[in-house]
Length: 108
Image (cartoon, rainbow, N blue to C red; front, side):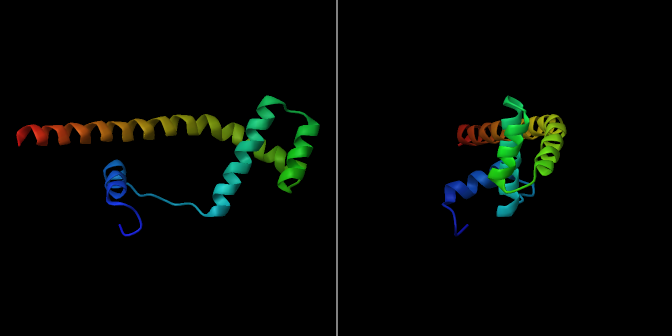
């Protein structure tokens, strides 16, 4: 609570109440960014020169680019449903919390 303003802390608590929040390592975020760029680039134009350019840019082998592309294509479909469920749950909690707040104000 000392690092962030009170209103931010309150929003975090009400939004994620009862959940565990995991803050990833910088390397994990970087890898996710790299993988997303590779997947998005190859979705637009998937050819040998693009794969070689991506490998060179990120300092990895073309074989690694191929594996990243294959795994992100498979993960994307699974994650989409999980993300939708989590977003819906957070939105529901926010609406519920707002209704409770309004009810408390009305009862005063």
